[in-house]
Image (cartoon, rainbow, N blue to C red; front, side):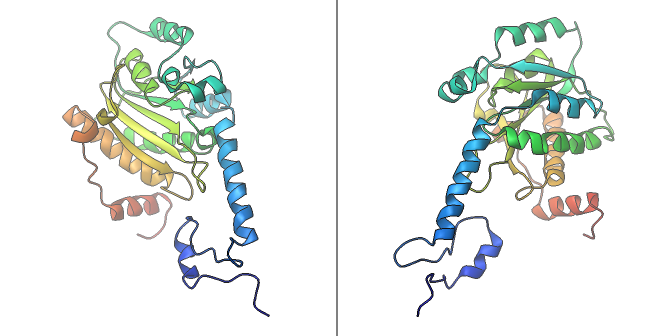
Length: 266
């Protein structure tokens, strides 16, 4: 008798990617195992989108790094509204705006502000945000030219552009938004990093630099920190970000930096 599943001749390539390739077939259909795995991945992606952000837990992890925090909220009052009205996730609500205004000290400025927003995957924030922030701070604190870091804003129901308003309110020269990315069918835990020089409401996507797919099965936290530190340093030197600021770090350098931090041979 023929086996129920006909394997694909290029099945060995599955070892190199999370993509659903070389699944084989059962007659003219997908094998049952592959079909069930797809349903599981879809459920995990939906769960990631609707998982509530543990803002207090994230704040505690950030405070353990020696940074004060601000708990803020976008103008989207709940998750349903957030998903239906992207524009409301791009700005802060009135209470959060007052918090920023009350915290402003005349003449005080910061080199960089970090904004942590749940985005479309609070799971990514819970899993990687504090670790990424720790790795970046290690580099900022040993720079020849020290960095002043603003209190970290933790924004519930936030989208990328909310960092423009938060960064401007914190009087920072640059803002970095750590946000949960839209879950894929194999990546419900992907963290995105968005750097903007001179943040202010109305900034465009072309004004930002993005580092994507930060997760255990994607871009490692240490490698992402190396790339972000390099971009921040160049943004401060040239006083710009976005399409005019290129990421020229070779992949080999990122791999070597990550290995060195882990104590591995390069």
